Length: 428
Image (cartoon, rainbow, N blue to C red; front, side, top):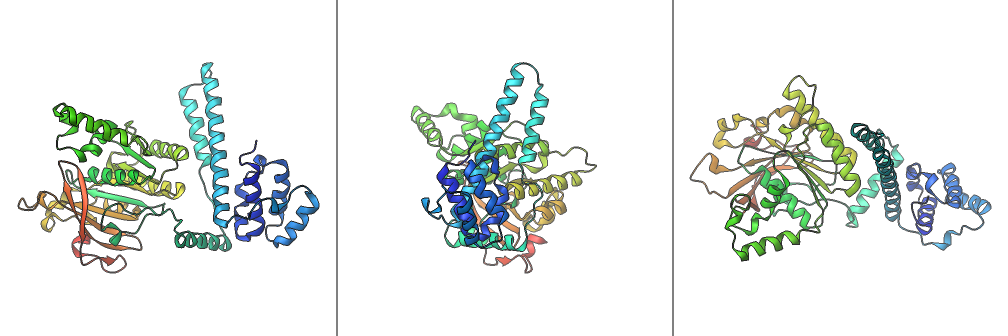
């Protein structure tokens, strides 16, 4: 069974011949799923992976009379990488569909329990994950050059924050980051998560949203609240006929957005991670949201601190594995009220040491009105308290609670690099 068409196969093989640095990926290609002729060429390249292209071509012409590399154009190294990625992704999907069909046939005959079927699927996901891999310096150099080449050619998969002023403080996400959005109750953590997800989905990004507390209907109501002053979750019966038409039209406009929700109530970190891996295999996420951290569980841990530490470590490992940024909401402890003006600090994170250690970015949500009733109802701060290789500082925002809309309005003048002394009110 061939995965790529003959032309694409030849383009990959030609690129492997001409780009020596690309040959570090040859072992990722399962030769059993190449055409018979391509298998011979694959074996030649594999055995002579350190040789000059001319030597490979000479042996190839001696062994494969019909194969002419001039039949196809030489694609760029980046395009060849994409073809190899496509090969592996398509092969994984075909294997997964075959497994599902096989399980379905057995279950139809009542010869398999659901637990056994689930076990086979989880085993497949585990085997399909990247696992432990290593690269030598030559391969590392190739990966680094490819990273910068993609950036310079505007081909990188960087995820730019969708709010005004955010990108003046926060670095763009390029995959593998674990981001924590932390705040007290009623500060608008979920509103921040949904606003971010909604804006990225509107830009065509593929979003995974795991909600452990709010069901999908309420989440969608909150996302469409931006067009209405009536609370859609509690008072939609008050909508006029015109308002009902407006709501239905707004709902229909999002039908093609690639946003996938999970509100199943599953709280085990291991089950959540397995589910995210499965969803990512099917949909190739740009980012995953989890709302929220303290509702997740990790059985067997003696203390909440140890449990949160294990969960955070597992989420960071997941982000590294699937190469997708994960944004998780978190609660702050009750000591926030003792701070000057109630401004949160990293030390106010519940189980702060374990969360701060694993997170690449920590954003603390602060609403001044909760501690000073004379402040504006809409004033909303996103305090970047930690950012690896980046700045810390405060981003000022406007939060329309009625419509659940958040907008950036400015940044603090004291944004600093994280390796310099951080803002006193952030770190305490």
